[in-house]
Amino acid sequence: MTSTSVAANAQSDSTDMKEVDIPFSEYTEEIYNPETETKNTSYNYSNKWDFDGDEKNDSLLFIGNGGAHTYFYLQLTLSSDGIKRDFPNVQLDMPYPDSLESLKKWGKHSGVQLVVDDLDLDGISEIYLNFDNPFGAISAEWNKKGIKSKYVVIDFKNGKLIIKDYN
Image (cartoon, rainbow, N blue to C red; front, side, top):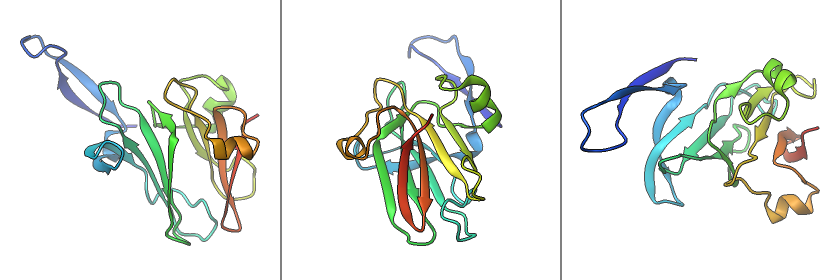
């Protein structure tokens, strides 16, 4: 993980500035958020992982809301079909890739919000998301599919999106 230091100042009239590190700064960029109709700091992890097994890396974005305590929603596009999939109910405040080892060690701890790994040992990466926070919500569509928690795994089988609760 690399980070960039930026000056942060909570009060505009203060001259007392502190350095704040932005985690995974090499993946930050300004991306348009249609909900807020603004360009906001976001995370672009595109071309790092293959989620559909076509041996081409896919697009994984976390688009920021621009708030003082920024939350980021998931946007995923597979190389095989080019369909942009937005998950506005999946809001993370720390969309920083963590390791499978951290997930095994800490479980559903709020510090582990994103893990990309071959969780089901089929040779293709899946996405673990922990969106257990005030801004994350289980959509009605996901409720109909039996999702009961804010700890989920996103997978693709034969081009079909599969979402399941993380056990």
